[in-house]
Amino acid sequence: MNKKIILALLAALTCAALLAPQSGLTQPPPCPPGMVWTPGGCRPAPPPPPGYPPPRPMPPPPGYGPGYAPIPPYDPNIKQVARRYITLHSCPGEACPPVTSLSRGTPVRILAWEGPFVFVRVPDSRIEGWVKRNRLTP
Image 1 (cartoon, rainbow, N blue to C red):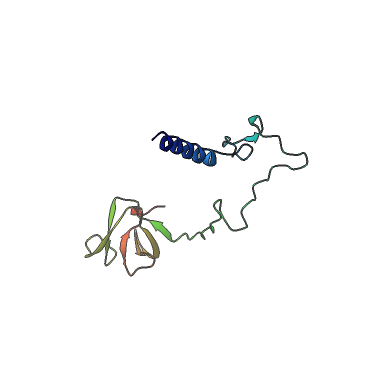
Image 2 (cartoon, one colour):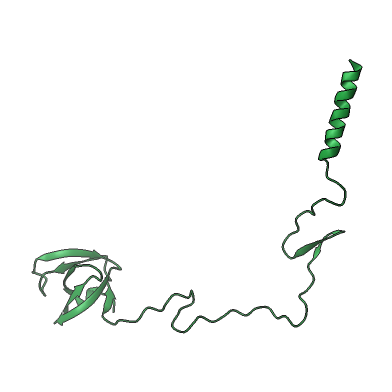
């Protein structure tokens, strides 16, 4: 029985020795940013060599904005609904039958004027009607 215990202990020690990291082959512990691993531990990273300035940010290409998205062309006839909601009418007047209503921020293109009323169309749709000009953004 003592031989079995001794053999089991011997097997356990052999496995532990095989699984233990070898000296000189250990991975260095991770260092925080701005530090490098040296044989003595983590140390501050050395400064960059002279003659290598840090890269400068490139300006955007012509015709592009800060995020490199194309600058949309300005169209003075594109406005937005300035009120909580507005009602589009079928003719230039408040008594005309309503066509639909639009909520604040909806873009519209002005197609015609008649007094204080403008004929508008929602871009990329077939919705159009008359509304007072003062209910749109300037």
